[in-house]
Image (cartoon, rainbow, N blue to C red; front, side, top):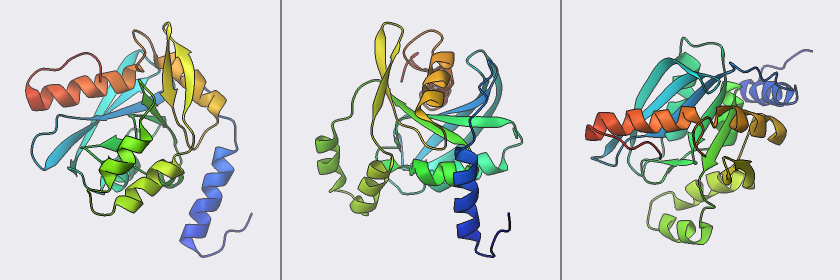
Length: 211
C-alpha cells in the first residue's frame, strides 16, 4: 500500500487499519492506567501506571496539566509516544475529564498513539449537569464536542455491580475483555485504581483506595 505525502491522511489511514485488526489479549497485556491527583493549585498531577494485565506494575509515567485547561489530550499523547514502555497496548482512564474539566479527545488519542483507550466510570454521567457546567468555561463547545466524540456509554458486569465505559481504537468486545481482566479487587480496573492512589497520595500525602 502506498501512502500519500499528507501526514494527517496517513495517520488517519494507519489508525483505521490498526483499529480494524483484532487485538490479541493476553493475561499480561501491557496497560497504562491514568488518573489525576487532587485539585490543588492551577497545575494538576497526572499519573500513568504501567501494568501487566491486572497483576504487576511495570513502570510509572507522569506529567502536569492545567486545571480546567485544554491540554490533557496532547499531554497524554506526548506521554505515550515518548515512553520507553514500547509494548503498551491499551490506555485506561478514569473518565474523560481530568483536573476539573480538562476534557480529553479519546478518538485523537487512539489515532495519534495507535493504542486502544478505555475510559471507565463507576456511574452514568449526568450530561445535562455537565453541559450546563461547561458553559461557565472558555472553549466550552470544544470540550462538549470531545464528550460527544467519545461515543455512547456502555456497561458491563464486574464484581456484582456495573462499570460504565467508552472505547476507541479497539472493539467493544475487546474493551470488555480487558475490563474483566483488570478488575481484580473492585469495580475499578487495577491500573486506574492504582494510578488514583499514587496521584492522590503524592499531592495529599495520603490516598483512598478507589477513585
